[in-house]
Amino acid sequence: MKHFTITIGREFGCNAREIGRQTAAALGVKFYDKELVTLAAKEGGVEKLTFFAPKEHPGITDNFQTEFGYGISGMFYSPKAVEAQAGVIRKIAGSENCVMLGRCSDYFLQDLNSTLSIFVYAPLSYRVTHISQAYGLTQKQAQKMIAKIDRKRHRYYKYITGKNRGDRHGRNLMIDVEKFGVEGAVKIITDAAKLLFSE
Image (cartoon, rainbow, N blue to C red; front, side, top):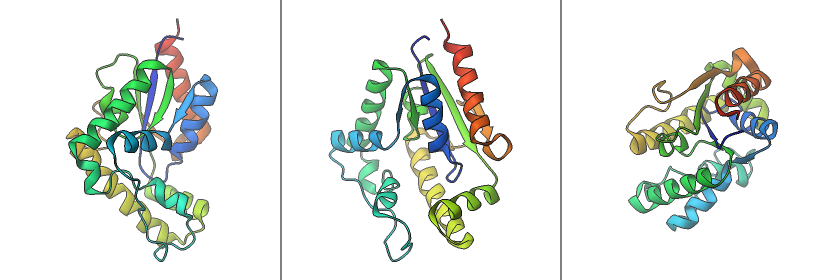
């Protein structure tokens, strides 16, 4: 295949991480998720933060909490932090075929013809069920978490890009995960990648 990067944006609770992992495995490339956070934080001199206090969601591990820290502090809005994030994403995209999850990667790579930009979404009921089952939360706790994380991510994406996170403009594919499931979403993405980037 030709050189390519697949970026996956998402609403929280769509199991996008699993879609990204399986897509990367199917295409035989690396999947970048938390690695982008670590590298960008290191480059920008920003420490990863905890999103939830343990007392708010005692069933969630510290590792899970840390995953959602990137972008919620004022430190991540600094020009240095934004530049570091963009630099890390562009460097990786320029050096290897890969799948990237979130981190405004679609925006930072929008000028490259080798980018396939995906957005996955699902009805709130589907996302609440997934999050409550995945992390042992009540439906109410899951809905509260979804609202909070989506709000924070949307605010950060809007700040960086000037656009709404789920805007169809700039996206090549938008997939309803409730309708197609994880396996269906992976097939749609891999088929599109092979169509666009096959030699």
